[in-house]
Length: 426
Image (cartoon, rainbow, N blue to C red; front, side, top):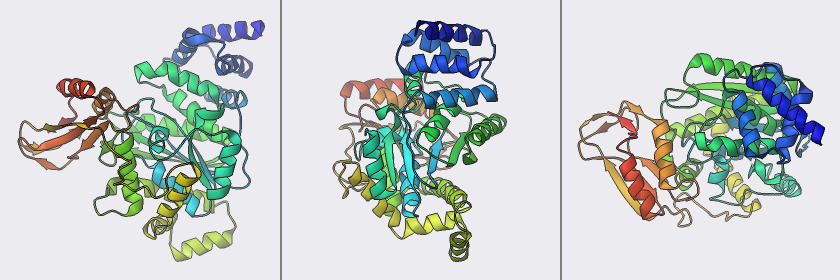
């Protein structure tokens, strides 16, 4: 044990000066972190060691493998689908729409989701508004057996445990290196037994990845690691200038997703379209591995995976499936986007425009800062509703966005902070 710790410390020294690590060295580090033998200081040094020089593709594979091998794993038969976003965009809660679509199509999709890292909330924080998200391994098997899918927090039962420890030390900076994003996502996919994966990779001025060139490099790294684990993968690169949907924060984002499933007239159509793109790509990927009879039937009837996904959404099959998943995870299946249980914070303020014009930009980083000041994700009812999106007109003294908090103190702080962290450029 002492020898392994010394080897792990020496590996960090090597990485800090830009040297390449072997699998044995990387495993030693992951094992120490996974079993909480390193402490925050050494863990932070390792998390920081890859920021400047980064890791080679081979090291990314080693990191992913070691992260998986030092935790528990799930095993499912046949095609196991999954979808994941690299994050960094507040709002855009597509998982709550994609998972029930794929499960309703008959494919297994055990979704391991994260809590907030660089945004006001993660998918696990949002799903927690509807049901429990922390389960044992055997409980997850039971939920998936009943419904074909689940949306759970991956850190609840020792799955890729080193990842959650590293996320904890990265949180204060609201920052993840690109290489850490790849390892974090792929380790969870491998540990959950996924073999057909779609990655949502947004890029834009105020999100994690700023340009198409960097997005392309990330895409190639994802494909390299996926091939090592025999995973069929599709990486969808999207230019993203604003959140999909209007709600930011656990309750508001959950309401947006449910309104899409419910086909509400005032649902966010941009969120729906992004979710259908992802679900369609994942269905295409899964169909390609199924018997050709089913693939021909779907192509003949719908034309594409996206059209099939849209049909599942329009017929109400996705909503029905989501309610089954919510019930299986201990929630109330009769929940809706306007349920009283999905209540917002009682402390509310409307932020008005000081001049007329058209919305030119929305700053995702400043949205995140403001939503966190309001209390998200700890306060489920805290967050921001975007009354205006890019391209929409606003008059002087009209509402740009509405902020919610469960604390008068948080609301007061946020109202002061928005002067220094403007959400809109008009």
